[in-house]
Image 1 (tube, rainbow, N blue to C red):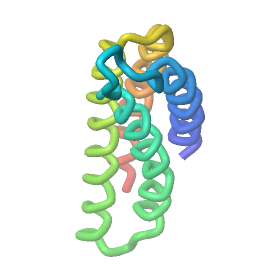
Image 2: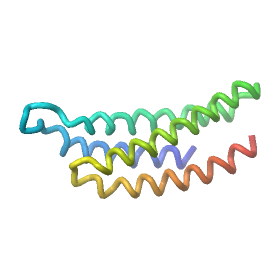
Image 3: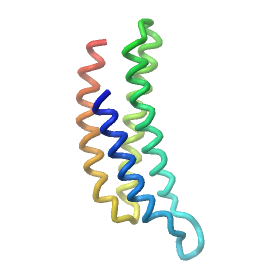
Image 4: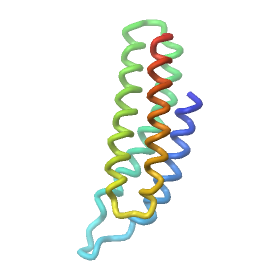
Length: 117
């Protein structure tokens, strides 16, 4: 849970930094498509914490597996969106590898934690 909160704080800071660069309109007047990925990483990282708590508290194994699958799905989506943001035209993309390294640590912890449930 603690690592999930660290990922949330990190993704929020990265998102706000990148969002500033991508909020300007393109020369043709359109928005940067990558701007939406900044919101996605925040939403996905916010959802990690409650899913972990729900998985810890759930006694029914079927419902517990649904929470665990949701955590895995959110982690994979965070990873995928971090790659998308890394290819954006922003100065903040240099911080994305930090997020990805924290996600790798989280995945490793997650695998061990899932075995204990």
